[in-house]
Image (cartoon, rainbow, N blue to C red; front, side):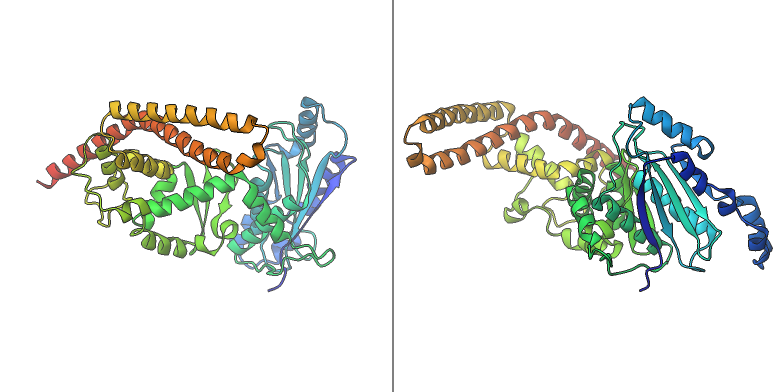
Length: 427
C-alpha cells in the first residue's frame, strides 16, 4: 500500500508568533475562486464559500492563540526553552477533500493533545496536495508540565494518523520502519500502550465485560455502565473513551486483532460457558447453601459466573456494575464456601484466627532473620513468607466481605423485586 498520509514534528525555540502567523495564513487556508470554479457541483461550491477558512483552535481561540499560549507559560513561569511544537500531516493529491483533511487533523489534535495542551490546527490548500499544520503549546494549561517530543509520542502521532486515515478509507503504509533511521515506531507505540495505565485499565474492563456478557448488546451496556463511550469507526472497528479522559482508544489497533467487533462477538459466545473455573469444577447448589455463603453463591449465579443456563429475567444495572469486581467476588465466595462460613460471627471468628496465626508467623520469621546463621534458614523463611502472604490475603478478603455483603443483599433484593414485577406483568 502507498504511504499516503505522512506526519512530522519539530521544535519551535524562537518566534512562536511567526509560526502561528504562517500556519493560519488566510492565503493558504482559504478557498480561492479558482478552487470553486474547478468544482462542477453548485452545492459543493456553496459549501466551500461558507467554510472559506480551515483553521480550528483546540483549548484556545486561533485569533488570540499566541497571547493565550504565552499566558499559560507565564502562569507556570516557563517562558524559556522550547516554546512550542510545529507538526504536519500531509495527504496525496486527490486522495482527500479539504473538509476531510481538516476533520482528520482536528480529530488527531484532540486525541493527541486536546486533554492538556492548547493547539491550533490549520489545513493548507495552496499546494498540489492538502496538508495539515499543528501548533502545540509546549506547556500544558492543566498542570504546567511540558510536552516531550520523543519517539514514543511520535509513534502515537503516526498511529493516530494511520488509524484516522483507515477510518476515512485512505491508504496507509504497512511497513512502519523509518527509511533513514530504520526505527520501527510500532514497537514504541506498543511500549506506550503496555505502560499506560489508562490503556491497561481499559483493556481489563473490556475483557471483563466480554466474560460477563451473554450478547454483544450486553457488552455495550456493561461498557457504558463502566463509564465508557463507544465510538463506531467502521463495520468491524470500535473505539472507546472513558468519561474521565479525552483520548479515544481504538481497540483492535491498540490491543490486537482479538478486539474487532466480530472477534468480540466470538469471544462472548465462547466465554459464556467458561466463566470462572472455581464454579465450573464444583457443582454448587446455591439454593441449599445458607447465610453469607448462600448469598454470595446466589449472587455469583445471577452474575452468570457458574451457570450454563441463560437468565430468564434481566439483571439490573446494580448487579452488572459489579463486573469490575467479578474476580474479587469469586475469591470472597470461595473463602466463604470452603470454610463453611454462614454468619458474621463465623466470619469474625475466622478472621481473628487468621490474625493470630499471622502474628505468630511474623514473630517466627523475625527471629529467623535476626539469626546470625540466616543463610541456613533461607528455605524456612521463604516458606513462612508464603504462608504470611496467604494469611494476609484471607484477612483482606474477610474485610471486603464485611463491606460488600450489605450491597450484595441490596442488589439481590432489587433483582427479586424486578423479577416479581415481570411475573405480575405476565399474569
